[in-house]
Figure 1 (cartoon, rainbow, N blue to C red):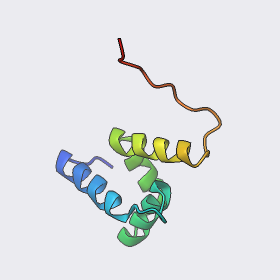
Figure 2: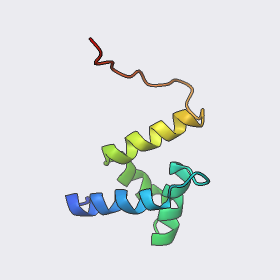
Figure 3: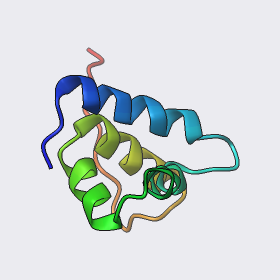
Length: 78
């Protein structure tokens, strides 16, 4: 599935609207797929192709200790 830049931006916006203190980014993604009648496999492809969503999902997973290894962050302090 190939999304245009506008569709990709709309995807991010819609998922962001679902995120709340009670709903994690992963849960928001699943809710988005359910709302759209989308298969989880299609959602997975959309997530893989969208760096913004992938980054936010990774950050959320790190906060929830769902990743075994945290990604290193570059420091720009000099």
